[in-house]
Length: 171
Length: 382
Image 1 (cartoon, one colour):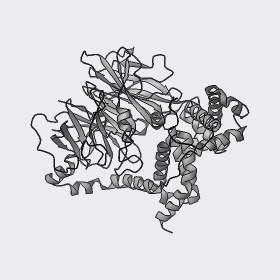
Image 2: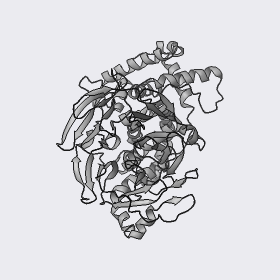
Image 3: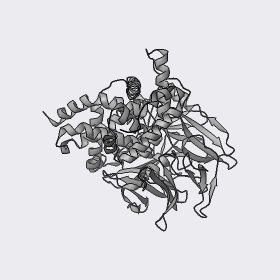
Image 4: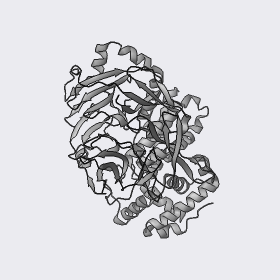
C-alpha cells in the first residue's frame, strides 16, 4: 500500500468520529470541518515519521484538541449566546430541539479548555488521566476544569440542571 | 446521569453532516511543504517584468487585462514591517525600506510571541504592540499570556498586562492614528477596554467597542470610532461601528454577504477615517478547500465600505459578486495603511503593490525571496 493510499484510508476512517467531537467543540459545521482538516493536514505532513500508524488517530485527535484550545483560534471561533434560532432544518421533536439548543447554549458558556474537557470526558468517555494526557496538563487541572465546567453548565440553563446533578466531577 | 449527558451530546453531534476531508487536508499539507521549499522556483517563473505584471494585474469582472501603468502621483517610500514565520512556528519581525530592501530583524524571540496573529505597528513605527501565547501558570491551573509593547528603538519589550483563559479577550492591541494603543484586557478586567499611552504609561478606560477585532478610526471631528466584529453565534458575524460616546450602529454587511451565502470571519483592517474595511470571509479560497499556501488569521479578502455595506473589491477569483478582483492578497492589517489606496501582497509573495480604488496599480515594490511565511504588519510612510 502506498503512503498516499495508507493516509487516505486512515483519514477516511477517522474523519466521522473526529468530526463529531469537533462539532461538539465548535458547535458549527464549517468550523468543525476546518478543525478536523487542520488536524489531518498536520498528520499528513508527519505521516512518514509516524512509525506505528496505529498511533495516528491519537496524534490527530490530540492535534485537533490542541488547535481548539489554542488561544487565538478559539478567540475567533468562540460561540456567544445568541437569540438566533438554529439555521438548519431538523426532524427532531420539539423537546429534543429545545434540549439540544439548551446544550448548545450551555456549551457556549464554557471556556475552550472547559469545553474540551467536557467533550473528552463525557462524550469520548476519557478518564481524567487520559484527558490530562491529551490536553497536556495535570490531572488536578482536569478535575478543576471539570468541576468549573459542570457548575457553569448547571448555572447556564435550568433545563440541564437535573441532567447534570448526578454527573461526577472526577473518577 | 453521565449516560444521559453522553446521550444528549450524541444527539447534538448527530447534527454534523458527514463529509470527506482527507483530500483537502492533503492539499493543505502539501501547500505548507511546497511553500517553504519552493519559493525560489516561483521567482524563476516570474523573472521578467512582463511576467510579474501579468501575474499581478487586476482583473475586473470577466476581464483579464493587465493593470494600467503606474501613476507617478504616489510612491511606496516608507518602512515596511513584516512578520516572518518558519515551519517550527518560530516568529520574528523584520523591517526594510525601498532604499534598503535587506530585511533587518526587529524582534526574534522564538515561538512564545504571537507576532503574525497579533502584532501591530504604531503610526510612527516606534512601537509594536503584541500578545504572547498563553502558557500554564505556576498554579498549574490557569493559562496566562501577556500584552506586550516593543520599543523598536531600544529593543525593550515592556509588559502591559496579563490575560487569562478565563478572561476572554478578543482583540489584538491596535493603534490610533495619534499613537495610543487600544487594549482589550478581557472579560474579567475592571476596565476591560482602554488606551495605553506609550510615552507616559497611563491607561485610560474607554467605551465598550461592541465586539472583537477592534480597529480604531477617527470621525470628521477627530473623535475615536471603534469598528469591531460581533459574533452572533456559530459562524455569524456583524460589523459594528461605535462612537466615543458608546453609540453603536450595525453595518448592513452581514446581510449583504449573506445574499451570496458568505459569512464574515474577521475584521482585519480599517482606513483611518473608518470608511473602508478589509474583511476575512468564508469565501476566501483558503477556507476549507483553499489553493493558497497558508491561511493567516489576519488575512482579508474583501474591501468594503463600512457604512453602506458596498463591496468594493475582492481577491477571490470566483467571488459571486460582480465587483473588481485583484490578483494577490490584500496586505493583512496594513491593507489600508495608505489613505486612498490599497496595499496588496503580490501573488508570487515577492513584494507589494499599491492600487487605487479604481483598481489601478500605482506602485510596485519587489522583495527578497525567503523560505518563511511572510505577513505585512505595518507600513509607515517616509
